[in-house]
Image 1 (cartoon, rainbow, N blue to C red):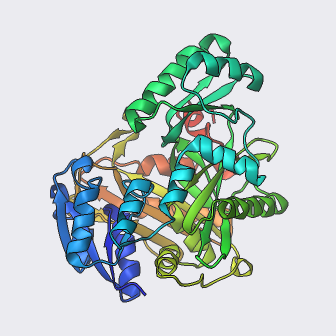
Image 2: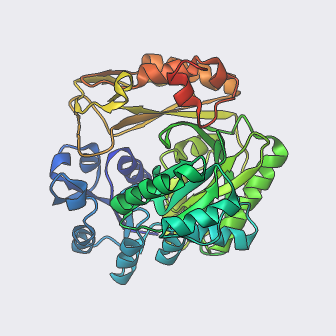
Image 3: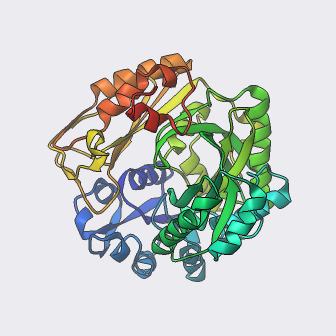
Amino acid sequence: MLSKVLIANRGEIAVRIIRACRAMGIKTVAVYSTADRQALHVYLADESVCIGPAPARDSYLNTTAIITAALGCGADAIHPGYGFLSENATFAKMCTDNGIIFVGPRASVIDRMGNKSQARRTMMDAGVPVVPGCRESFHDAERAKAAAADVGWPIMIKASSGGGGKGMRISESSEDFIEQFNIAQRESINAFGDNTMYLERAVIDPRHVEVQVIADNHGHIVAMGERDCSVQRNHQKMIEESPSPFLDGETRQRMMEDAVKAARAVGYTSAGTIEFLMDKDRNYYFMEMNTRVQVEHSVTEFVTHRDIVREMLCIAAGEELSFTQDDIRLDGHGIECRINAEIPEKGFLPSPGVISQMHLPGGNGVRVDTAAYDGFEISPYYDSMIAKIIVRGRTRTEAIAKMRTALEEMVVVGVSTNLDFQYSIMENETFKAGLADTSFIEKFLRGEV
């Protein structure tokens, strides 16, 4: 078993990992920027190291400072959480080169799946359904336009190194293709330093359904059910639930089998997520693989009664999975709402500031993951998420009712939040009927649903 783990992250995921380590008897090391001196993860860890000033590029993305901190305190492993360096193949290799265990997949796997066009080709070779499109990638708009004619419009232009909705544009016809390609390519260069693009047929108003997978170093891979993440804004998820209200049993089984097939095709280990787009006829297509733990892993933990972070730590230590595919049963229905410091009526403008008072909901079947507390400052330098509320009910209807109660109970004073906005979604008839697709939020804001 691991003896000391450095958590290369902040916020609720750092707190989540620290708690898992403490329950396992593993010592923890927190890293923090100067803006996070009073952060909860710093207080909870056994040791803490300041790694730089507030901007993430100078602290939480400072690979040299983090590796130096790990070596200095004698950590035998680094857990990257999500975001920041979690899908950085160079950082994963740095850990290995310095004799530190990276709690996640191998650097070569991260690199292979981080390039979206390469991942797409890998899935095609493995027999996993992919959206019709081009096998090759493009740097030149005119060459891409010629290839797009064979795919057909509307067409999705995507950055090979993309993520978080950056470097993505839809071209409706040949007339707007060059313009949309150039916009997407500029975004890709600015966000990822990469001008490589690829093309897919656009799936209009799809569902976004993903499968949680976990694999050890002994050849065991388990699909832990799916999460429906269709309620999102600008490709950023707001609400996640498991199981998906849109899937039938046969489709769910095929999707889980394809997710395992995808993980096996790349020799995956640790926790990861296979993300699919699903059209209105329940045809699903591989979109990408996230080679890390995700924000919404808590939903899967709630309905499977399995500790994903604990399993990641055990896998990193060389142990086998503690459960098999036959052990996975989805118990009831889980829903997660992300509570952010933002102003929905002003285009979801971030609302940094100090939380003067906060009350968290509780009760049977209610879980809150947070790193915030009375007097905690929501920094303008980082993500504005305050907390995740996760509920489980015997049915989806019961889970929605339980989430409404939890949202009513939660109080945050000092910053604006999206609590009321999330509550209004729970009251919406389209959402309650399980009919929300990825266009739901835009239609909701326009009063069309």
